[in-house]
Image (tube, rainbow, N blue to C red):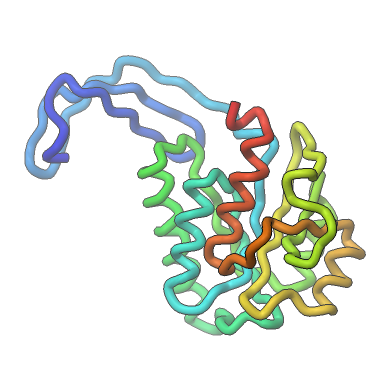
Length: 214
């Protein structure tokens, strides 16, 4: 706040599409007085991007959420993959999800997003497969896939589900369940990326080919 001076432009949002275009009227050490010049309501972005993010260990989960938010993910689903080192159990689930939500909100503010991403409850294999089944397109990142991610035919609207596996890879059981639910596989590039960064790079590849990045 100390860096903002009277007369400078500031936008504020409720994180659900409502934006107030403001000008700083007065600046103090811990607060600002803002004059609202205009208000606008932005529609939800289409197509929507949901990322099933296998839970990484340590603070790499928050890093994944920050990067996904900056890239434009609309829904982030913490996925308890079979080969995930970290699984949220008991009281830890609520605390871990709260950290992911906080990371998403802070990154959304930094990125000047008018729609903040939703961070859902932890999903198991059944919940993940149901979300894939309901999607307009579901893609599982697989370094051994024959088709590149950039060649995927994207729907103009609806939900795109992107599945990011753990460092140990997606198990055969999970791959079979996702394929049965209608998912296709695609490789991200010539190198294998960490679970904490692969989703954000893939989101950029996909969203750059939609009207959202036009």
